[in-house]
Amino acid sequence: MQSGLRSKCASNMRNIGAGIHLYAAENNGNLPGTHHGGTNYWINELRGPLGRNYDRIRISPVDPKGPQRLARGGTSYLMTARVNEAAYANEFGEVDPNEPVYSNLNRIPSPSRVILLFLASTNKGTAPTEDHICGDISSWDGFRAETWPDAFGGDPQGNGDAGSSNYLFADGHVQNIAASEIKRRIESGDDISKVY
Image 1 (cartoon, rainbow, N blue to C red):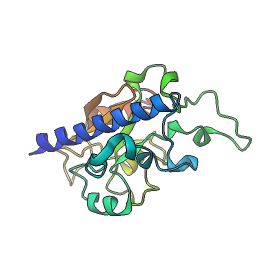
Image 2: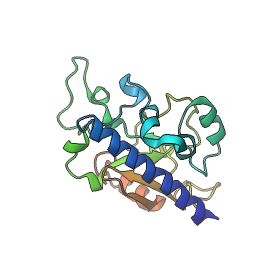
Image 3: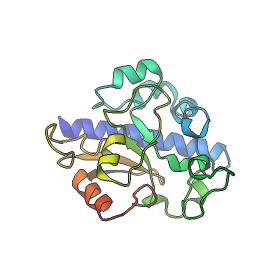
């Protein structure tokens, strides 16, 4: 059962990845922005590329809030905030040169190592504005507040590191990664929002 749900979720992410690549190809490499950047919701920007399967693809089969997200126009998947320069700009609009911004697919230096989509935490709201990571994910607690690292095979009574989750990378591949591996990387100081 769990492996079937994990595969279905991964298929959704691959389809979304194909939609993102099509969107970028039609927009000079630019990726759809998140609500954080004041743009339309990224998932709405993919309505055309995803076609008639749009509603099915944007909701993960394991998302307990899936029906509410579907009804409100939201999605089970969170885009990295790094697609918006505004998320890393100071009050003068200058982007910190130490913060990589991935707003253009053609300028991502290692697309096979950059995560674009995460599975949304069950703590996240269901509104379409909840389409991106907006908190600090540099700590394990912060990461778990935003994402669902143990969506598959996790222990509901545990600390979130027993299962795994799917992640969509900028090159379009989806990888299922153990929550314990993500936790180890975060606790060792890696910023997996920059490069995995």
